[in-house]
Amino acid sequence: KKGNYDHFMQKEIYEQPESLRTTLRGRLIPGDESKVKGVLLGGLKAHLRTIRRSRRILFIGCGTSFHAALATRPLVEELSEVPVTMEIASDFLDRRAPIYREDTAVFVSQSGETADTLQALEYAKSHGALCVGITNTVGSAISRGTDCGVHINAGCEIGVASTKAYTSQIAVMTMLALAIGEDAISTRARREAIIDGLLDLPGVVKEVLKLDEKMKELAATLMEEQSLLLFGRGYNYATALEGALKVKELALMHSEGILAGEMKHGPLALVDETLPIIVIATRDSTCSKQQSVIQQLQARKGRLIVMCAKGDAAIMCPNGASYVIEVPHIQDCLQPIINIIPLQLLAYHLTVLRGFNVDQPRNLAKSVTTE
Ligand code: UD1
Ligand code: M6R
Image 1 (tube, rainbow, N blue to C red):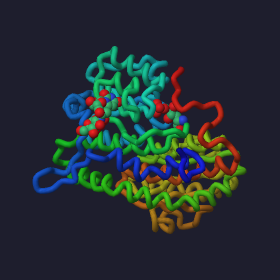
Image 2 (cartoon, rainbow, N blue to C red):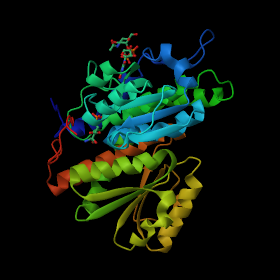
Image 3 (cartoon, rainbow, N blue to C red):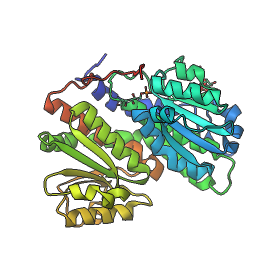
């Protein structure tokens, strides 16, 4: 039931403070005199030692689920010190890529039924890798077929475009990183700060949802456009890819997420006064690089829409921008959860304004059970 909402997607966007609360429920140990601050993932406990000792971790998924894994890769690498490689399930299968017993393969899927991901799981299993599932659907093929895993508990998602599952996937994979890294003394303060961030998360998500009206306003200025680029890097390369996927699948507008570090290797040639470009420049270790990307785009008279932390507009784009999206600040690795929400709202409003079907985009199905 849609309740007071016009579409399931809109309802699911607005549910995120609650869906994240459910995802985190019972899994965060706030810490006191008797217990250290930490995470508890019931389904992984028995396998953490094996995961820590693996030679490589592979993240495997499709579409939005692949993006969620990409958003957490930097943190998993930082806290585990195990190399993490990214695999789009179909490409992994096309290559019949090498995979070994010493590998841990993590399969990310909202439905747990995606054909490509499921086949990649069968393939990885037959090569002896430890197979971990991150799924939303209890009893799904991927949930049953993996050696162990974590249910994201985001609740049923009806809109074909994935929204609340994405933010819950990132939350769970953040906890996965914390669990893998839990025995390292050197990262303890970092891990505790992230746990504090997770405890604050539902409140911060509520805060960012207040940008709805502003995103509607922005959508009205973009509705006639042919194309929209999004530049991100670091934790928010995934945000750029995922924002672009939402805009293309829903609003049926060409949109491309670009790794900002690649700008000079081609995309810069596209920049002119007309093409709208969203630059994600929230606070993290890459933000001074994004500042210089903004300067270079401005030097070419780019039509910039800048996403930055509240109060950072003057520093991040001193020469102004055609539009600024100021979002609340949270720990760097959790920022992708906050940053995607205005982009979900933007894609939603663009779709409504352009008169397309929000919950059932043309040619697409919620669960892709054929190759
Ligand atoms: C589990 C219960 C939850 C209960 C909690 C109490 C289930 C589904 N969950 O949650 O209702 O409140 O204990 O402690 O009964 N798994 C996979 N692959 C996946 C996902 C999960 O193999 O893709 C496995 C896990 O390894 C685990 C089981 O499924 O053995 C349940 O996983 P999860 O629901 O995440 O576990 P808990 O959070 O402990
Ligand atoms: O159910 P899954 O997470 O395995 O689905 C993967 C993709 O098909 C899915 O994320 C798709 O990209 C969505 N339509 C994105 O909104």
